[in-house]
Image (cartoon, rainbow, N blue to C red; front, side, top):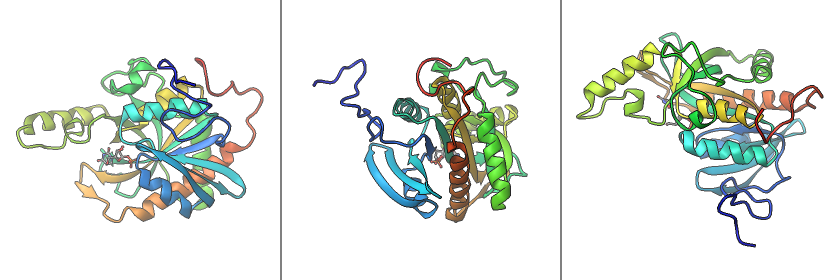
Length: 277
Ligand SMILES: O=P(O)(O)O[C@H]1O[C@H](CO)[C@@H](O)[C@H]1O
Ligand SMILES: O=c1cc[nH]c(=O)[nH]1
């Protein structure tokens, strides 16, 4: 049967994420980097790659018997929006970004594992799903907040695993260089202005996907959160060269939180994917 342009799914297969209806567990970790999907094999048992299409690499493994999916989103808001919308329709009900960020506070050293509480509006893909009601000082988030159950699960599992966890707010930019205030030849003034503007937002870090995960996840009726490792510190100019141990800590914590969240959801919880919440 020919695909519909309006809704290009076919026989239950999503157009971008390499999966079919009814084949995924309810919880999914969301790294940006496809290589981090393979790293998840070090924290999940029976891990198997289910497929890859474009930036969407998908694997499923188990933690103490609980199935957990891992799907990369690629870089930035547009590819992340596609991942969230398709995963929601595929039956996923909880998503947890597992990514990297640039810290904007001196105290957040490279390697720090951070639970995001909220993202400020940045005008990217998320703005189609959530109002840009945040103030320039970062006091409003327009629905870009992490699900409280996800945040609680992260804290509880971090305590039992002995992994330090710092709560942060972030801005997400659909740009790594100028949009994050990195100096480019010929754009030194604009980069300096953008860096000052990012600092003036009052957020603790900058990445490229969290805002979309929180806003689109919430709009799709999912429980959405984000766990980020500070890969860089923009204030001290620090960079974590040996990134793997911190990524493994983050994935281990994310997997344990996902397992806790995969337990049956109370009847009072609103239905999952589909429709406006
Ligand atoms: O570590 P991941 O999840 O890939 O995320 C961060 O790394 C990429 C930039 O290098 C962006 O996607 C940014 O958000
Ligand atoms: O500086 C950084 C580091 C990780 N991810 C980003 O988006 N920026």
